[in-house]
Length: 505
Image 1 (spheres, rainbow, N blue to C red):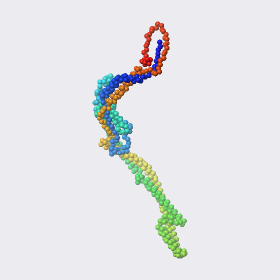
Image 2 (tube, one colour; image 1 turned 30 degrees about the horizontal axis):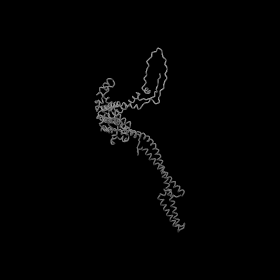
Image 3 (cartoon, rainbow, N blue to C red; image 1 turned 45 degrees about the horizontal axis):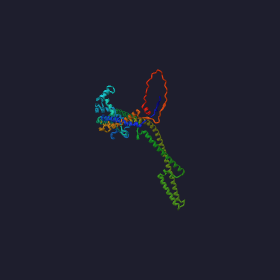
Image 4 (cartoon, rainbow, N blue to C red; image 1 turned 90 degrees about the horizontal axis):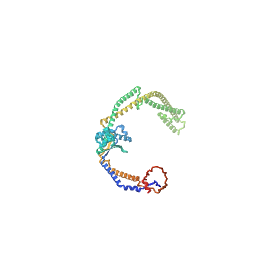
């Protein structure tokens, strides 16, 4: 007996594979129509949900005329950064604000937010078998807040100061009312926070002002007592009198020294001119003398007469000799007057020297007094700085307290936020969308049925064919030994797979 074995290599017959789609078109169409119909029924019967949006602008509402003086330089400071926007988003979606909105709109009375009010039979059965938690075990307020968080979406609009508040609900009017109420509650909460902060600031400043007033009074009393005790007299330019006098004496000493030096130099010049027989015309003090000027004029006149007479008379003529004698007398008078001027300059220099010595003594005395006054002035300045700092702090506190008190009395607390756009009642539901749902169901069911049909055809083996080039080899029979008295078992017939059968055909 011989057995033949075929090669296991097979190929996929794509033509046969895709032809299965045409053979099973009716089943595919029925399933697709069924899925599409179910999707249409779901979209038509599902509860409609509406969504509305309110926009809140974060911007300063303070008028330039009512802005506190301390904040006038902060107009260019950005109100919110990225973290600030995230903080305001969390505040808007906080449980505190949602509680206020829930109580205001009575959401706990609506089955949409309180599931325990209208539980279906299926839900009750699931609760009984333990497949669903019992909503009655959760407090009503917590159930309502959980539902509100699920339907609420708060986010900051990119690159703006706008925060959007979105809310969805089965009731279109409620979908618009809730975000408006949330925005209003947020703004009211910000105003209440400002009022609380303003009241806390006023309560803090009142005792601080009283304490500072007492401290300022004590500090100024210390300044006055120290000034009286140290006998510090103030001169011009808010300086100590001893220091001012020292400055004035130093200036006067410099002038006296300069005058003495000038007088000594002039007297020395006159002395050298008299001793050397030089001209006295180079000395300004000599030339400025009225007597010497008249003598010089007379001297010039005599020389002119001598010159005129010399043209007609000899040098030994009595008249010429008389004129020359007068000229010599004039020279003697000029030199005598110059000596007097020199003596006057020397006397002036001696007087200046005496004045200089006196001023030096006075300056030395004032130096010691000024040094002591300087040390006392340092202590006094420290006391004055302390008093000035406390007074400035007191004035600042008084200004802030007046602003806080006036705002509190007038209830003027502008919030840095406003509703930029209120939510409008939506006319169309955002869910369910019949067209997209039906289209998606049609496409998905068609794709799934096509894939299932192709896989079924592939796994059944009908889309397989022998690989090209495959051949069969004959295998020689092997003689098996016969066992005596062994019962002959019924031979087992193995059914070859359809793939192998097709390949052997």
